[in-house]
Amino acid sequence: MQRIAQLAINEEGFVFDPVQGESFTVNQTGLLIIKALKEGKSQEEIIRELVNRFEVDEDKARIDLVDFIEKLRSLNLL
Amino acid sequence: MRLKYEKPVITKVETGFMNKFGSSPLYARKIRKDIDGVSVEELVERFGSPLFVISERKLRENYKRLMQAFSSRYPNVQLGWSYKTNYLQAVCAVLHQEGALAEVVSKFEYEKARKLGMEGHQIIFNGPYKPYEALKLAAEEGAVINADHFDEIFELERVAQELGRQIKIGIRLNMDTGIYPQWSRFGFNLESGQAMDAVKRIASGDKLSLNGLHCHIGTFILEPEAYAREVKKMVEFAYEVEDKFGYSIEYIDIGGGFPSRIKLKGTYLSPDVLIPSVEEYAEKITQALYESLRPGDFPKLILETGRAIIDEAEYLITSIVASKRLPDGRKAYVADAGVNLLFTAFWYKFNVELAQEASGANEPAVIYGPLCMNIDVIDEGSMLPPLEKGSRLVFSPVGAYNNTQWMQFIEYRPNVVMVMEDGSVEVIREKEDLSDIERRERLPEKLKLK
Image 1 (cartoon, rainbow over the protein chains, first blue to last red):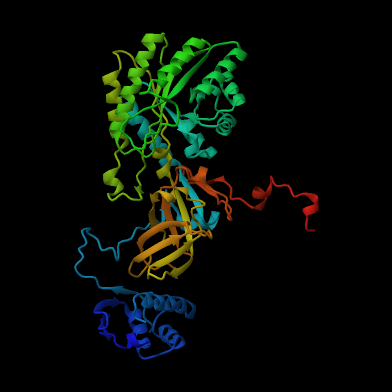
Image 2: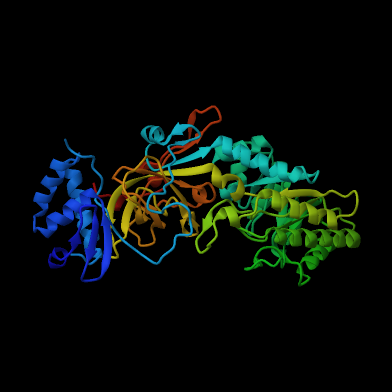
């Protein structure tokens, strides 16, 4: 989780990775997850946060979180 | 209050790449909620998923458009419906109602056409293997028979002997029309003189008489000019035969091979740009006929168009059953239909439409079928929005060859329905169950487990 800790994030969802020099855009749910991962929160905590803030149930949030984390891995952000 | 949920998405910002297409690939998507006015969701509720859906209206329209293109240019045109392209009874029956003959290439297909109600004289019998008894029956019943090789000519002579009368036959030719690969394994080669040798053999035996010529230059032919070359060579050969042997060539059967509107793998241009219209084929072919035919001579022009009539009249509805992330970051979906049902997936880049709205940005995705085989890929890469389990996709065109070349491998074949012209929906092939697959099996007594 070190690389993600170095990401520069703005509130609009613009993400800059100083290690690779690459930029990304994320939507609001993606932004919440990246911020939470940066703060070292657990997956269960992140799921709770998603359910609290968005109209989504726990099962769906879990499926999407797992997929998003796989995507971050493929982008070398994790 | 909670905010509206959207699946989390991260997109890499790429600079320096230009998008020459107008719309953003991140949000462009194709939606099809109904087929001929019947909603996809309703179809799946009633008939299950996956589901083949054929449009009767579109099928009739395609036939009429093709026939209109040719018969408005030439007075003597006949279509032989290519059974192998799709021999579901309902499909054949629609086309026979419209006036098509049956074009069959095996004993099985001959039997199918007869059972459906076609008379022998309404059947064109082609193909490299016609078993003796099938050949004899076809000759007895007056079918149009196009001989493929010398052995078949000898067999037909035997049939004529047994029947005690002369039989009219056609021969299949193969020739160079500029198309690569040249289909040279069927029929008699024109340029080498083999075709003329076949005619000589027919004449010297005197048990048969030649009344037609058949040829098929290949499949998915994108060059109308190739048909013009084919027609010119066939007509020249017909006159040579008529003048030398006194036969009357009553029909010129130019086979099939017209494409449907679909992107083939490996092509860059969109089908709208690449694929000529049937009118362009009709124009080239009839023009070549008029340039080669003697004044006042109008032999029957037989077409064996399959793909261009049925392909775009059929759709496959499939459901997403799982999604996963590939190591290279691409999204992958598992659908309940695979190459077991979509044989043409090996060549086609299908038109994939969503049956429901989906929110979220598109991302590159690959769609796999349900088979435990690496080759089971029905879409190698499309930009798709996040799809939930249970989402429906509509694949098209799927009418050509899939309902004949599908395979029963670890899955049952699903329902095939036809949306009729009046908007009602009929099951035209019921989905299979275990009894269909095991009906012909016999388990020896000593192997029975209980």
